[in-house]
Length: 304
Image (cartoon, rainbow, N blue to C red; front, side, top):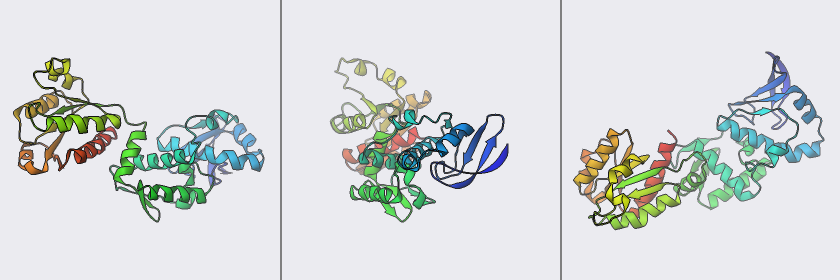
């Protein structure tokens, strides 16, 4: 493998490409397309794409740069083995509208954050416009300002942060998040049952999580008949420790015995009940606040 002085065609970085002799291809690393990743392109494809007219490059290559950046950011391997760029340019991965480009930015920040308000610093903001598949810095800055206006991000220089609203929106867009089934352990005879059923469950469903709540004993539905089976089929259990109901502790212990993760929650007026939890519970004042916190917590479990 020998080094050759080559320029990345798509972001125009002056970097050294590596020739892969046995494969007759070039490997480009650490250009603006890949950040800290790499992509491979056949030698003959490179030469044909290099020979294209500037007017065509100006329109198409920013999209290819954005495509490479997004895929390598997701740790996917990129091999350009054809000068026919149509399969990439016409794919659903390519944003067609300003709103779709804004979503690309939110998803990028989501991939690089653990929670809302985490700071993501762009090492070369002047060359980071391929994050949104933009053709130039001006459009990228405009997109960032629009996201700020919508209160989806905050920005100080090259440091970007998802707001709680932005995090929730990005989580709903993320293709990384599976549709987890969550069993909510709340006593059916508690005054908390209806607020959880009417507020928390729909909010979780709206954000891609299938929430199941234990039904009252008088209910003849399958969920009420066998809550332990519901737990067995769940990806995570949410145990609310408010008022220390023994059924909740039993359900949490049953889940842990099966290796199912448990997220503990507790109403602010009864934090003493959280002492028995093995982890730090999510303390909530209103069920609306709890619903938002759970979406964030569940999104974080998807990222681990």
